[in-house]
Length: 213
Image 1 (tube, rainbow, N blue to C red):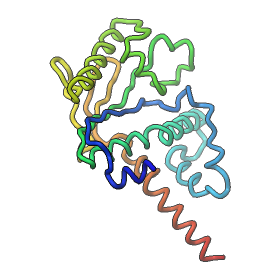
Image 2 (tube, one colour; image 1 turned 60 degrees about the vertical axis):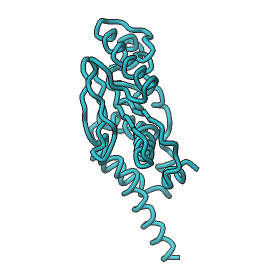
Image 3 (tube, rainbow, N blue to C red; image 1 turned 135 degrees about the vertical axis):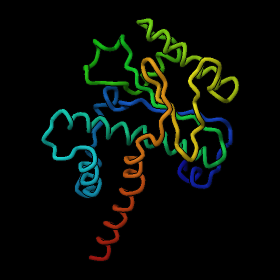
Image 4 (tube, one colour; image 1 turned 45 degrees about the vertical axis):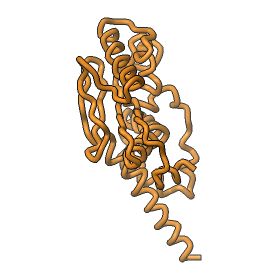
């Protein structure tokens, strides 16, 4: 199982690049249901997630955004960070990114509230459907990063914003429409909630239920 390989650091120490977009659940997978997690037996999940993502539930726009954020975090963000942590801990050079540019050619094909949805970075990496000078430059920048990584094992090169390795500081590269910015701790609090607090709470709930039988 993958989790066992991660725990035991049984991984090749080859250079590893991974990343996510800032609205992974925004549109493409927005019809995925969370019904399984909201069943009575998963009440602990519902309580913690609602408190963190939704709040009071009175703001309908926030409810919509919260739903897409939960989907994206569960399906893509958490797995990506887990993989980055595991490869880093095994001794591999790791590069993590968050892509933030919504393609212009899709602006009239999906709701305006959708930011960078799952898979959106692929268009710029391969130069597909580039619609402006801004996107032309972004595409060239991403081609350089990806090409350098494929050729040398590092995305860095002349004329590019330095992309640090993902290490103890959990640095990653924000790839925005017109700039690249180094940040730290991608969704750190929510990653801790979904991978530590939630399992611990579930374990405590299960133990309590067993003790009452």
